Length: 476
Image (cartoon, rainbow, N blue to C red; front, top):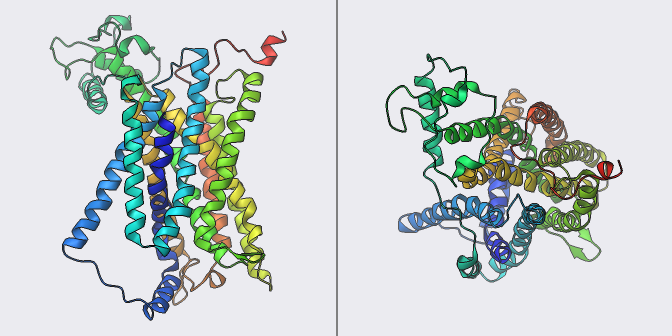
């Protein structure tokens, strides 16, 4: 029941996200973009938005970011995952499949946005395009609301951020106190039966946080904390290294999406009698992604599940690794293709970009739902929404890091009156191939850092299916 809402809502926001990724790297081609604006000024007189119109515009953008990106995207994955019981073998497999189809729904929404909404805005007007987006969002809201009587709702148990802050503050205050020999004596819980206390197992790492359980003789949440609060905080801190390393590893994704379209604009975009606009090249990786997601969920996962016994075929961290490897390979291939494009006298065909588009689709099939499912499954029950928000925050920060990398490379390669590698009037006067090699090196270093933390990570829950052991174990 969630899937229609998921596929409808991002259809209006996916295009905005792709556009924002382009705008992050807009200074790279400010000369060429400026030239295009000059050419169009002879045809259309653009008026500057000011006054109440500007207020209305920015208010709409911020409301869209707050409601669509901040609330809906953070809550929908958690709401969908809560409908499955991970301790049930059948529902555990269904939960893993849910994240694949959740990503599939986002891809279909993005495809509709790039085809239908863009066509309406170009040929029928922006008002009709935005109006249709509003109608689709309203329909999505009605579909989600129609399932309210049937959802499994996890009742919130206070602010998760407050609980984490309490543990950090209390453990710092008790830093000079000695832990008792029997730590269980200090782990007095204020949680009753049936709460999150029953679902968290004690870990022996980050022992300094256990001092938050010591009762110094004062009452109150800011004097001593329950064992559940301490274990929640440990889980979040253990996720941070993987969050940071995967954030850096994802930097190449917005860069490749942006510059591959720029490369496509310099190639022969005619497919027979059909002319493909460079702006519509985003459709290619989305089509790859939707097809591969369906194949992955219906055929690859069941095959791997029989071999490994994991509910999702392979572990979440292994799936994320495949995505990062794909992005590194895409950067290398993009560098080689760009080098060949500049050396070839005849304009290259658009089909030369197919390998890097394909690898971008592979990365979206593996790392995108893999990260989302990993954060959701590893987060404690009271922090599911925060875990999903961490994922979207990671994507946003990686786009900002991509912008920072572009600026650093331009500044480092700028000599006198010569501009940086990416400051040419066009790609023919730039060094995009060299920049791709820089992106490849950054991606490789980030991947090695990710592997370091991934090998040391211990899953909070066993990712195996309870009733389906691996083939190797069944043969013994």
